[in-house]
Amino acid sequence: MNPERRLRAVMLDWAGTTVDHGSMAPVIALQALFARYEIVLPDQDVRRDMGLLKRDHIREILTLPEVRAKWLAFTGREPGEGDVASLFEEFIPLQKTILPQHSMLIEGAAETVARWQRRGLRVGSTTGYTREMLEPILAQAIAGGYRPDATVCPDEAGAGRPAPWMLMRNAQLLDVYPPSVCVKIGDTVSDVEEGINAGMWTIGVTRTGNLVGMDAAGLAQLPVEAKARKLKTAEEKLRHAGADFVAQSVVECDGILEQIDRRLRDGESPGSRK
Ligand SMILES: [Mg+2]
Image 1 (cartoon, rainbow, N blue to C red):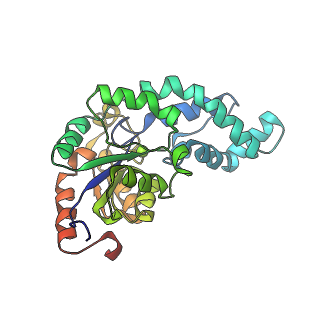
Image 2: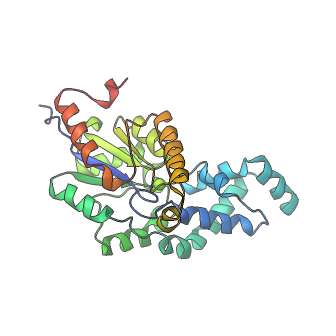
């Protein structure tokens, strides 16, 4: 017999969703990496492909014409797959200091998730970080009261986003099925694509995420209209990617979770969305 159609699991992204308001850490770390080759990366160039496994992300950055040209000037050759591999190797020790420093819990995230867990929802998580990179961030999150029931990294699932394998592995670890009783919450286009590819509901988050791209203090100083504009642009991008819902942060998802639960009981599934 099929299990009862109720919302049973929430799959959460890390940077920009539960930790690291504005997804600042990967930007700072990747900018520091490319600076070693005299390449100054503007924020928007780093943020364009955020959410991918960092090795894939480095490969995407190297395809930017500006970056290609500067790489050629510095090294005397076109960037190739060997450069992707060596840059990724170089990135690992670099991020070990930078990532944890910028991966503080997003305000209210720990309390919100703990409340969901007390209500019986299982909580999984996926990321663009490898296990080695996530380890200190996870330890820090647990110390702060955020403890997902499962955590899967791209290096453990065969591929990163937009492939659905990390989400599938979470579902298996949590013993939750079918995918339609799960919702994926994340702050990037690749998060939304990952959720859709897994057959799960999707919620895109704006205010705390990569598409707004500002830490809490910076955002608080922004004039009201500028802030509203940034939120609107982020929302449009996430909806365009196919997000079922958009919220400003993980803390503001309670009403959406209730709505999904109701729609599941009414026989709807993410596959039947228009
Ligand atoms: Mg993220």
